[in-house]
Image (spheres, one colour):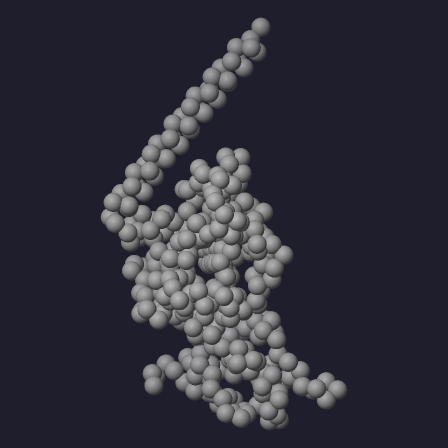
Length: 352
């Protein structure tokens, strides 16, 4: 075992099987949440719990287990359950959480799926995946082809197969890019499916068609338009909002407030490809301004150099960026000229 890893024994007294079961949660979900968030391993047999991790993390986690065990004390003879939100609040209050996150920075990360291991291809992708592991809300912003959605889906599948979450929810705003949704054939579900096709494609590639279909039938994987999120609270879920540049400010706020306990949300989008009407503010752009200073939310900005598709795609993105920049300069120059003319006109009108 590495010199930087220790094992701390933690005996929970008095030893009561019902209280121990309530602490661990159904299928040990509470312990898994602590392991994922704190970067430790927890083993137990009867009332002996072992916390395996770095010294500065393992000791606070063992103390956390003792504190949570106290909360299982019987009331009127009935041992109290430990709910996921109690575990969440205990972790948030643990001073070692930030150290747990920082201790894994810079290390190589990878994602396991049944189709093999997926590794980030560049430093920005590496940081993006690390942030997904360590933050409840992660934004991936950048041009097409940088792996934002693909890596998010891979992380979701990895979390599901390691039983860190109970379900995956994939959503997109049903906004037309020049076409009209109403003219597509079929019912609402069939109309919306083409907008969600990139999410299906990533799922099929990583899990296989039959596996995905079975999970969708069991509602373990749900693919739905953003409008279906209103009024829901999503616990124990890995939620991906794709094409978020096409959300309105109200829709983005609605989505972010759907996130429940033991859930993660990944928001991906490209602010250079907004398909909303000109007078409507993009929810993604506003979220970057409003939420950028919150430590619990990570923002990852990809550039054309991070594109992992055909090299011509990177050149296309750069060409459009240069064009947009030149148009902005022209607008600024025209505005300055107009302001100068207006100032001259005011001066001439003021003369007797």
